[in-house]
Image (cartoon, rainbow, N blue to C red; front, side, top):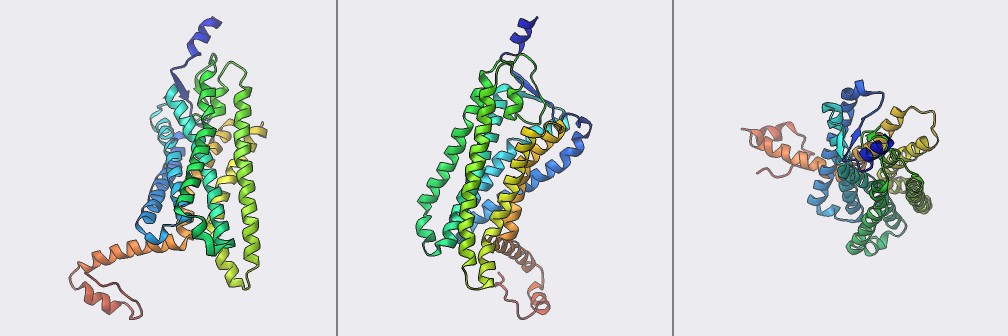
Length: 342
């Protein structure tokens, strides 16, 4: 009988994703905020990409890295949400073994890429504030492209062992994963073998990526703050610090949930399973939703371009109305400068 069970699951053709164990009755309600976040993330990140592409003044290192972040967020979100919503709405829990490995690879690979992009953005802020006269000569388009390539390669290489480690283990217990997606450690826990290599590698990647990236960002901002406090006036200090505020908010939104989730999983032995699963989804899905909001609201150039885009469209629509030009000039203050109407 033991041999039969081993044969059944040694090479499982599918895994079963259980969603959020213990909260199955609330799956439909839980799906509402997640679906809302998905819509906001898609619209927000596509808007960022559209604005940067259309506005020549935004063709610089900071905004190139921001576009990389938007693309990474879109891929990361899309690798998780559609399957999660199919579980919540249609009880479609099966996932092909190969699809599970691909999803696992994308989650870990693009999470590492996102962390690397924050490091690249910290480098950009460091050069822009500490050596502003050489900002565009140091971070040329070719240098930005090389940094971007290094970020992508690091994510691809560090995530590559995950699917191979999952594939090599025999699965003789069950093929049911108590999660909404193929999280590496939850998958290898189903194996009937010593999974120490998988556990140690996952711990190494988490500590290496988070540790080195946070240290680099902290060193960069230490130098940035020194440069800011050396400025002669309070207004200059506030204005310069404002150029970093959106980046700092995005960093905190990404690293605080990531570190908390990792610590809760490693040391939160008395924490309920559904809390682990919920928080694992939050730390993966909330930053991609918040990033375009943070940069859209706190970055003057993006906010201004977005406002001009909608204002220009509104003016075009209004100009087609009979008597609109006369009414427009009669109602608006003479201090407002209007674009020529077609």
